[in-house]
Length: 117
Image (cartoon, rainbow, N blue to C red):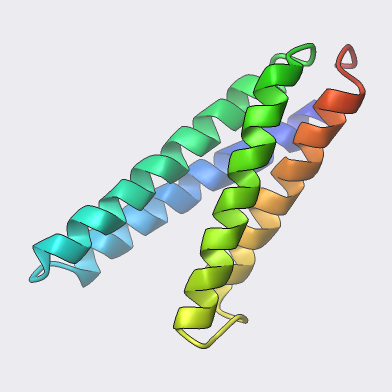
């Protein structure tokens, strides 16, 4: 399970790379939107990193709570984005929801079974 946890943490980091690339390509002439979108990329990278740290610390329930809350926040943000573009079936929306949902389950697993590896 720890391998699966790390795989999804890495997938979230790859999602951050894609988000950053899309931002740099899509918002070239719009510096205000680019700034906000790069801020979201920073959040995605941070979330991916703390999920990877949590995966390596099975006894850290505090970190598990932090990752759970922010994974759920990311899901809410992605759902809002899907509604804004009026396409909940967009691969970006589905991808981030699935990744963050799996990481949320892993966070709960860390809380419930804190000593398992």
